[in-house]
Image (cartoon, rainbow, N blue to C red; front, side, top):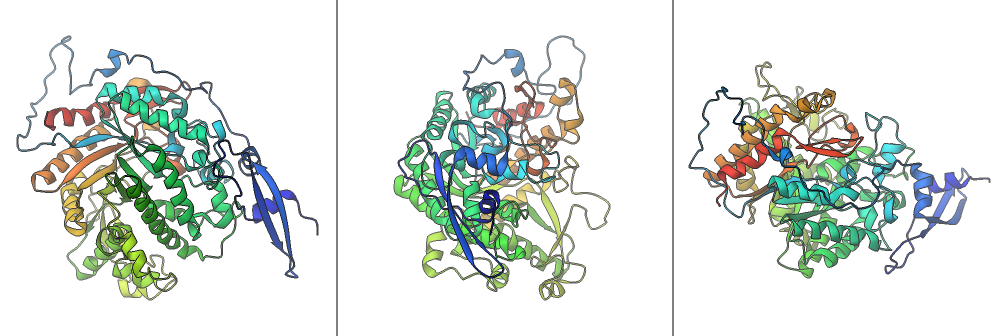
Length: 578
């Protein structure tokens, strides 16, 4: 039976057989098997280097002209002048604006932290540099046609891997106090397990040290969606039981290296989203026997176990660390006063935030409506696992962009829950951005490329109250991502029109005022992180969707502050206790 090497690689598993002490991983043994129609099995072993993985699975990647770490240049004072209406120059005169007075009953305490966030694959670039192994997103962007609507990749992105010193200096010059970023797992462990890439650890050492040098607090996320490719092709990534141990081993490397310099940690970012990527596109990754509809929930089950292991490792390294799990979602607004819509709202909470927040904050287990479905194919958590998962978030870290109206399916909830072929099964609730009159939207829409996102800041106080009342986080609540895509920003060509982003500016002002309202009513909010540090690869939307408080010229890699950056910082200049 003649089988090409490429066929073997795509159908076979890839176990890692490397020394943990290796500093520059070079090859891994590949074991592959094929079963013919006569059920005979054929096995081979192939040695692959990191470069081989890139060549066989991804292909050529782009590079930028700046490919060594650069020192920051002084930030021009002209780039730090706030826009109207925060500031007007003394000449020319004549403009008139209504006075907006400060609400003296609102305040952010001195220890309230505020900053910006970014994620490795979205901003770093330099995807093959200094030993990084490929992640699933290198395959998704390079090989899967139209997975990214613009057919763009993260090969160069914002070139943050080499320009991070400039980026951190710019944050400090603007007055940003916190920078939250994620680590590239496949940069630190190119095969996802086994050998450790010392160059990667030295790089992140310097990123952290540069933050501290500029008085910017670093916050680190272990995992923001860029799963090492080898783990996906070995056992299905987050669908395999082995992922918990591999993630724990990776976490142990990171915590032992950086825990003395980084206090705030997030284990995983938005599993509701990245588990929803499953099933991955067929014919690009190792096949799995898990039914497609079950895959997101198998992923979530393994995420909780992996997170719990990482949390306890962190506490064993330094018990004073703040370690949390990042959920995401929005406030669930009952669209009508019907009992069916009330039930739909509860199902929405259970299948969204409750999926991960209930196990980590309440009892180590799933909400009842979700568990009813999961029990049909997942093993229940053991009592030991529940105990291990419960209490493993020191703050309620939540990425909260918008809100939705929730309503029962037209056919009714019972008709949905009893019919696995129903389009809304198993969640069995519906969402809309329109009030019950089907006329007015919940708020101004973001870019058409983000149909899920409207400015819904009116509902933020109620949302914060719900989080505190339901999950009772002892360390308070942090909004760890929030922002809006400025409509049609990608169509703007001249710099002056790009830098004025009125929807985003009002979003940050109104959202922070809503947080101040909730805090004045007793909600314990401890920090915020704006998404994002600058325009970047917005996953399957490519660079067509803009969330940044800075504009980046992708040809020259020059950075410019937008008006929203000043609006964001100004709210703390006005309301934070000195």
